[in-house]
Image 1 (cartoon, rainbow, N blue to C red):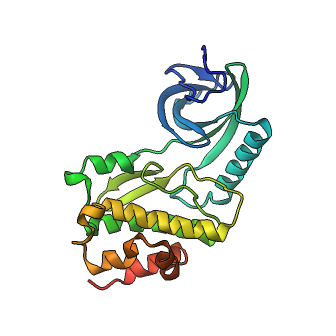
Image 2: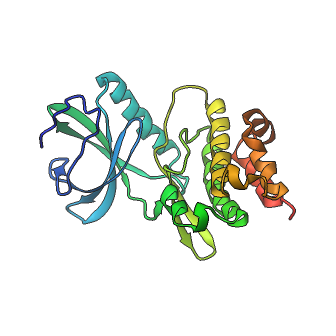
Length: 245
């Protein structure tokens, strides 16, 4: 493989069929990109099992090493949350003459919430259906927040969703350890989730027509109001379970 940009600012661009990890894994397709690196669907060659591989950009050797360590430890700490992607192991590969670290995790079935929403009529959900989806996410966040942890980067590009009967199954990917206040990041998780709900029901165009229960959650997207009302996922979950319609 040839890489013209040795700093890899434009991404890795791994091609389907590329084998890495001393012959353990093969690239199947590109899944997405983030601030830390890129994620690919891979196949574990010995078993045929699909895995996700997150390759970290080589900005600084020490910072990347710490980022990978923190990321792996974070995923391990919140491993009992069924809504979070499960970490397996890590690998070292050489790309463009540089050592790159990747984390191998479970592959999440379903589709990104961003793509799911685009397929819906009017690119939005009925508010009651949107609340069912938000509730599924809140249940996962409650476990994470209960451990004193947070997701750190919650948006429709980091949420996999799959309809199962009358419910939604969700998986949260790309959790980030910002190495700062957990309390502040827990509050940010809630504000980010409220924003997801706001977008699910149609955003600014439809917000004025929403019932009071939706507005009680969204709070006009005013961060200070949201943080006063919902201190963490547990308090938002309680509201959802007890809202009177």
